[in-house]
Length: 549
Image (cartoon, rainbow, N blue to C red; front, side, top):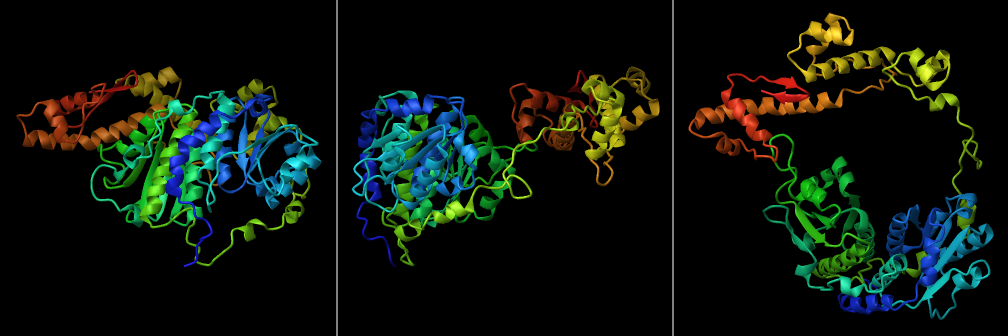
């Protein structure tokens, strides 16, 4: 099997140079780079680079956004999709180690022509071929920053990310004392834990073919660095997902590939509680049972820092985990297997001229660049479904005809909306005091008594808008919440009564455990059990929007 044998560096050896990389960054002069970032930080910033360097720019973008700015890290190809005017009115940061590859040549030629408001160049010194990036851009900007960061020959970036993360950290924070804030220990047991979520057997690292990396905030740049290293080393596939988005269905993949997949949880204090509630101690609302299988394979990589230095701490620990994964798979990341013997320099050296022909994305249906036209008054109407057409017209300072046109254009089903409004009013009044009669509620709401009786009998709203139309009113959130609680209680009632009949000697506190519940902080579960023990059949009532027995 062919590999990149010309690279002799061992990734594991580069871990020992982490203190040197951080010490290097601490000694660098960053006043100019810091000024570039901090000046006019309200201007949007685009950061461009290729390959493993992109993780550094994701870190820079994240830091820029903590300074009231908006930033985005992109590849040079994506620059081709951005209009000249957008680039011209933005800050641009280009990161390139060599400063002379085809990607950089494309960006330089375009930026020279556009002359953006702010342009910064971050590149490496001592390039024997001469730095094309600096040579070309010197005439239009003084914001070129050359640093001789540490590097090691290899197919992937190994020591340079530690230099560049630390350099960016210092430029944004002004902190020159980085190492003392980090407990740099590359012992595996210190850097991460790997095992089942709760209990059971998990696949060994050499069996894992899919890693799902969960991140948030300061851990995002590290997640991207890990993904780049894993894929470029050919070890396993990697999916990146923030913790919240994982809740929207992405957990299905792992549940279908438990035999060769694992979660990597990157955790800072900022999302620690969320990660605990979702992953490590996740429980369903109903039944208090585990959300995920107990033997879900999880690598947990955690930092105690809740500041920009958290990214550097996680980068160190995740690199140790990456090194162990590579060792388990008998792969040297700096010289990975290359079965079809593709020379990395060949595809990377593709001519860039075609990018100019590609041009930016078109902003109109006729294929031309354009600008936003004036917005029609009808599109900014603040429509209130609870109000009449005349009331909406008065509130928006338009004619009733304009409101009717708005309703027609938006395909709003007013009849369905009026029913939902009435339904919500009845349910809201009912939750205030469920012992009120239908006649009392009808009088308070100035509604027909039969309508009130009809809605009181409904557990949920049964009507749908007409086909092709929409209803902008949703069910009362308080009622939805209480209805879910009622359904939970209704399901628990027979379980409690069965346990009570089986263990009549037990007090409520012990019976609580028998039915799989815990005593919550407010004591609501215990109160529910005590009430159920006194009931012959399930019943409840409302007082001040709270369920009482």
